[in-house]
Image (cartoon, rainbow, N blue to C red; front, side, top):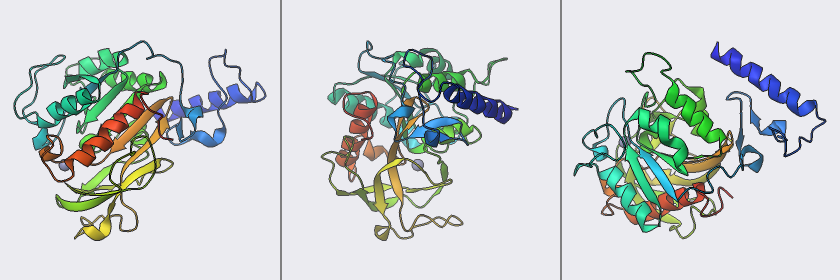
Length: 316
Ligand SMILES: [Zn+2]
């Protein structure tokens, strides 16, 4: 039923473009979109074209503030620590290392942050932020089991937020979430977590010049699980990869790994908004500045957030 509904939406969009002879005035409700930028599977405009960004200035008057969302609906990463209380900005526990690390590193860049693990807060407040950061929030992270109706309220909120021109940042086990919601898979770049190889050292290599990679060492030692992806991301700008010759083993059976090209960070415009994601971030020591490659990772991540919220150009 949902797919049929999406298909009808695609037809309407095509008709809207076609009926005007191509050029839809900016005063109209839709703008001209080249059909080649429409991903017909996810039924969204996505990729590197700014046609896929709804530059409606919806967030211009907001402060440079983001929402960190770390609600887990499945296995919980150790670096997320004790489950937080409901509501906005609950008291952090000493073991909420990833969340606290994100607040710290963003503050150092002049970016304020709120945090929550409450799906109703995400759904209700998302439009107050220039970006939402999914911090290893996993599985059915947007499902509200306590709601008797409209269980997909958070999905609706996230989708409309992207269409508003919002910013999404996904870290580590943000892959490994919402497997059965195609829109989210597209938001990750037509990708999701399949499995991972052992948590071990490897060399991250920057693959593209970009505001988010500027000044990051071109190669830096790091430690992670090096997520294997299924499907493999498409139509995105790849920002960094792991040098697979630095890994042994390079796969996690039965997944063959990505021996020829194993990306770990990328960006794209998605359905009107911006999406910047990285599979890195398994370890606590990547967020408290003490781990191998932590400073380089931090620079990459913070600059990714900066590009998403408009402090620097995005995904150039
Ligand atoms: Zn992990």
